[in-house]
Amino acid sequence: MFVTASGVSIDEMGYAMSRLEIESELFDGVNVINEAGSSNRSNKPLRNVDHEIAQLTNLRSGPHERLHQLMPEKQKLPVSPVKMLAGRKGNHSRRGRFSSADCCHMLSRYLSVHGPWLVDQMTSRAYVSQFSADGSLFVAGFQGSNIRIYNVDRGWKVQKNILAKSLRWTVTDTSLSPDQRYLVYTSMSPIVHIVNVGSSTTESLANITYLTVFWTFLIPYIHEGLDFTAPDDGVYSFGIFSVKFSTDGRELVAGSSDDSIYVYDLEANKLSLRIVAHTADVNTVTFADESGNLMYSGSDDNLCKVWDRRCFVAKDKPAGVLMGHLEGITFLDSRGDGRYFISNGKDQTIKLWDIRKMSSNTSCNLGFRNYEWDYRWMDYPPQARDLKHPCDQSVATYKGHSVLRTLIRCYFSPEYSTGQKYIYTGSHDSNVYIYDVVTGAQVVVLKHHTSPVRDCSWHPDYPMLVSSSWDGDVVKWEFPGNGEAPAPFTKRRIRRRYYY
Image 1 (cartoon, rainbow, N blue to C red):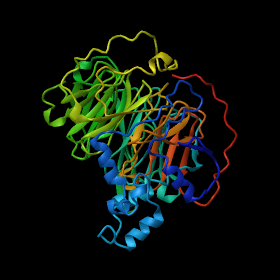
Image 2 (spheres, helix red, strand yellow):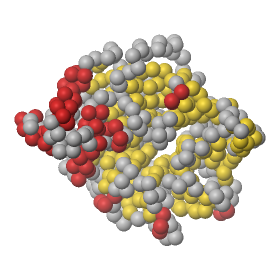
Image 3 (tube, one colour):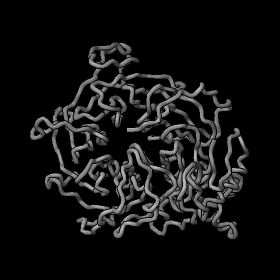
Image 4 (spheres, rainbow, N blue to C red):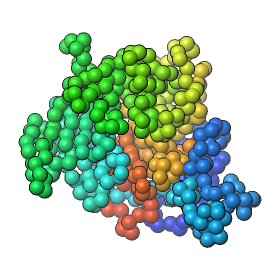
């Protein structure tokens, strides 16, 4: 079931496209709907983002301006597919074809709202779920030491089931190499493990390394540990919350519980750099663009920092700092242009950032909060919901979802099919929320799970979104669906409701 921005709950399959067109007209100036089962949510209408990114988003996801000129009275409304086709036939764009923005304008209106269909159901909590860059593979990591790689093009068949080595608490993150041959995974340990995804072995058992025959070649099967411990760490142990392959696949970058960013050289098979980057846990790191020169980091010290790898010789010195969150940051996602990124925060907000607004220091004094709160087991204090950072440098703020109990993740929607018109996120209230980047409105709320949704992933090409939850379910949402009714789910397992 999903809820539209107008507050209408819909759970039937295959409703008419005209209904979607009607609801897409509500994207501008719509009221934010309340989070399910939550109080103290803002119901004030949001204003459009008054920033360059609004123009960039419209350029990527809007139709040719001549189509709007033909309908001056409806310039704020989406152009229907019929009028888009008529405009192409009449060559109103003077190109004789649809542009990528024209395609995004149509595709972005048909969201992945049908279903859900069950992909997998495990007896332990799902912490990670991600499509590969080309959408052919899907990776899901579970607390019970299983990491499953599904072949999307072959009916979601399990291509490899990895049993994690030396697991501490849970699988905290995974990352596929750019060529999709290797996967690394992390837990609350300084050892990052790397697995050969391309081998023909389905079961990947811990503590086993051997050769496997793939076609007529011998491919080494790898399941090795990479030690991120620095020489000066002594006997101190730390955990790793976030890991990413570099864009050339030669390095790993990780954020850890000892306030540091680590860089590991895979070719030299050794740790090459450690930066004491923050004053609290570094929960998330990501690259700014395909060049791999700029990185972003987010921490429980409430700060986002920008790092230029060309200047890593100046250790511990970021290129800039961005302030605005009142609580720790759980996840960052880059728009991929080296300029904009979003962050999910324990202050129950997503913030949009422009790194051109960054400062060189954190001289702004946030002060001490007058309430006690720990997101791992407490609800967010009502008196804190309307507080604002005195030096907020963010471009926009998105509210409605809930960031509690775990490091919940948020993302931009795909560029190819939506023009990155949306932001989507998991939530502690068991739902998936989709926001409009420009208006800030909640476009859709997907409801199925019974426990927090820590991660979710939008297919890079198709209108398909997969969500995974602490209830153990991995489910996919689609538009227009595959013509089949959603598979009936088995009776819910009874779970203890405590969290860590």
